[in-house]
Length: 193
Image (cartoon, rainbow, N blue to C red; front, side, top):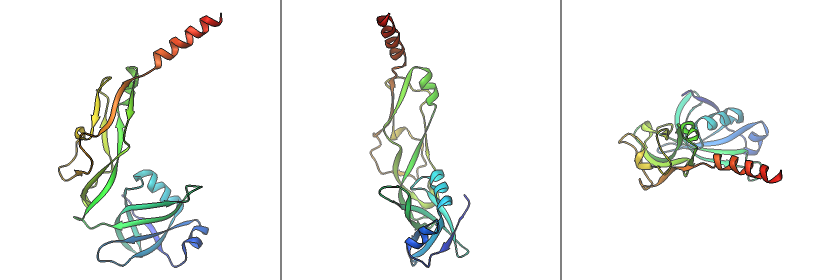
């Protein structure tokens, strides 16, 4: 993961935003808060890639920080990012964060005339900063209608602790309405004649 280059912030957040940058702060154990500004475009690209609770490597004043996104503050109307809070990570520190779910094999389910009904997009876990996974992969390709995928079905390192009930439903396979819809259309065409 490459480092995002930030500049030390010496102006108010309003002035920083006017210049097309996002103000932020890095905080953590045994350190003073570090105020920074980052290019809005670069930040948006990083969040799109790693999510709003992902790991971000920051270079500030020629020093590298491994951080976790703790809060992305957005404008209530435009939803543009207006401030970023990052927590500095130390190798073995335990952190609590949400890990995104990536679903694989949905095309196989659709071919069978079924649908993947997703109940969750991410899962809350606790682990050390150097063991954070980018995502959990949920392979639904071999599931059938009526099958369910739960947190307990996720393959994860023993260093990762799920903060939610392991019986929590992630996704289920339900019958699709594809054939029924086309039959209904054909019936309605017959009635019109």
